[in-house]
Amino acid sequence: MNGSFHFSFQMTLNIAPPGWDDFYRGCGHVHPYQTAGFGAWERFRGNWVAYLSLMNGSEKVGQCLVTISPSRVATWCFGPVLKASVTFSLASAVHGLIQYLRSLDVIAIENASTPPAYNSGPPGDGLRSGLHRQTLVIDLTQPDPDLQRSFDRSVRKNLRKCREGRARFSFSEAKAKALTEYLELLAEHRKKLGFPMPPFYPNHNSVQCFRGTGSRLFVALAYVDEAPVAGLGFAVFQELAVEVGVAQSSSYDALKLPLHDYIKVEAGRELAACGAKIYDLAGISTQPRNAKEENIRRFKQKFSSHRVDYQALTIRFQPIQYYYVRAVAKLARVCQTAAGRTSA
Image 1: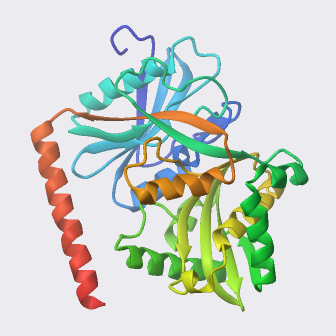
Image 2 (image 1 turned 90 degrees about the horizontal axis):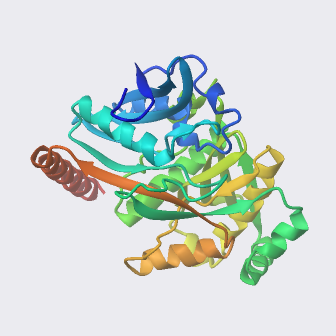
């Protein structure tokens, strides 16, 4: 037991216990980052993966996939997920989870997030240590004409411009050719921005990790004159689709075609045809810190005004060790970036 909370934790390390994804049936919309496929990906990246079951006596009432880095920094994405019938709050479950991880001697919890309130009321109510976060979602259950009308007028105009400008769209479950084209665009785009590759995106290894699980990875591409110019990845679990890994070629700006508008709209149609009911636009800044964050928020707001809340928290159990680990990691990133520029 954990203090006054009437639940305990059972942990399975690195390999998902039987029925992990099956538990989510009946739990509403569950983020793909809480699934066995994502856990396999985190293990591939070299992290420990803790599959934590929340137990009320002998009954399983919730679960949370937690990753722990080799430096003992823990995080989780959009958990814990609880049965609708539980009698304690999400905040109580998060508090119990924090105490359990502390007992495992992790030095910190970093940027851990609660489930977005896709299904009901404010997430993490009473979670005083959490920071407010938001994402935007598109309702894919509405008829296509209504969906198109829900977009900003500029989106419809941009679609016509793309179609008149020789653009072609493709969407596949990460087939080899499309995946290779997407990865080339993503690497080119991230290099131009001076960023490493993102922590998660469709690639040959993540596709292998997701294979045979309840989650799926898709790749959307926009071509001009048969050359791939822009791309976007998607992780899908049950009826929820989440976009990941925006990609574009170095020639994108010169073409002056709003291909990312085109991709989002066409991908929404394809995702709906695959059974998705919600398209998560993967977060917006509630208080943009710079022009880039403000521009991203405005761009996503063209497709939806439906905001969904969640919370994120960072807790430092051993601050000195935590900041030492952060400093070493930052130095490694600087050296990696410098090496990349030198080789270019």
